[in-house]
Length: 180
Image 1 (cartoon, rainbow, N blue to C red):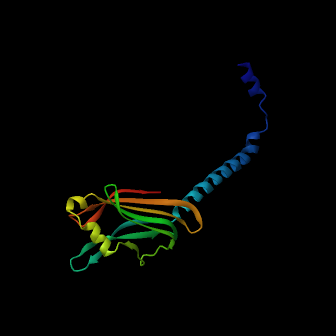
Image 2 (image 1 turned 60 degrees about the vertical axis):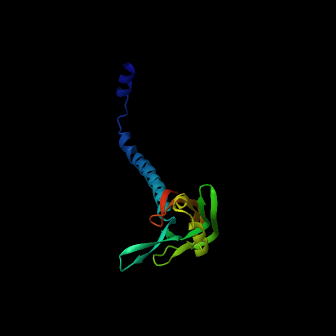
Image 3 (image 1 turned 120 degrees about the vertical axis):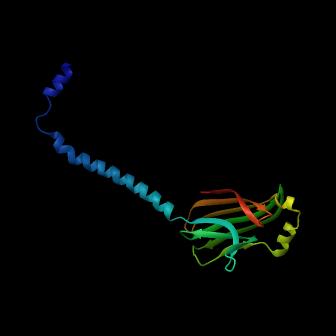
């Protein structure tokens, strides 16, 4: 108890607290500013990177007001920023047997609402794949994989879509989708 009493009685009479308060506030403001810069940088990178994904292709029937599926075509989309497609692959499998595999490399795609980027299987190949009984068609799977980056290189991003074929709807149904 004597130690506390000595400290309190010998406390400086001048208010050092008031003298150093602006320095303490400046240091806190500097730390908050540095933290804000880190958060802003992360947010900027996330909002200015390209986003690429694939989906089923179809055309709009204006008379019937429905979408007509085109199962032999895959539509790709690019949003937010131009993308350098390092590797894009479409594979169709029946169980473990690979029926079709197609890969593209080193392409540049730009985000545009009016442009179309797609991959189509030839009608002959598609008829050869689909010329099976419905029970075998139900075992068909399509794997679409895209590896891409921004134009300046930087980080590589991946998109993977696994689909199964639905003979009743004549369309591919999404089974699993992964992206980073």
